[in-house]
Length: 66
Image 1: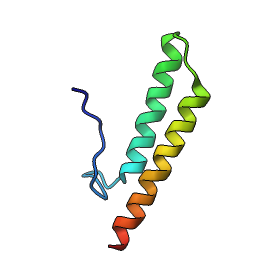
Image 2: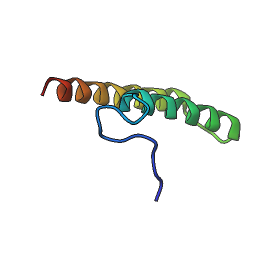
Image 3: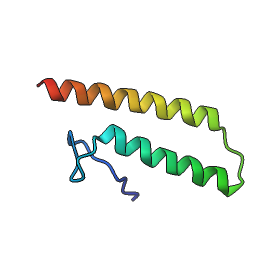
Image 4: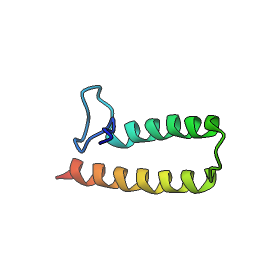
């Protein structure tokens, strides 16, 4: 099982929001995939990350109002 460095809490122990932590993780993953030399659709990856971050931000804003 892969453990991801972000959770559902509004802020983690470092004070970062899940959307920020996820975006940082994805930037690192993008660099790793660029460096591995395999075929990789970077534009599709970026679009998927953008969509996921938008959803996380919306969830954070909703939880912050509750």
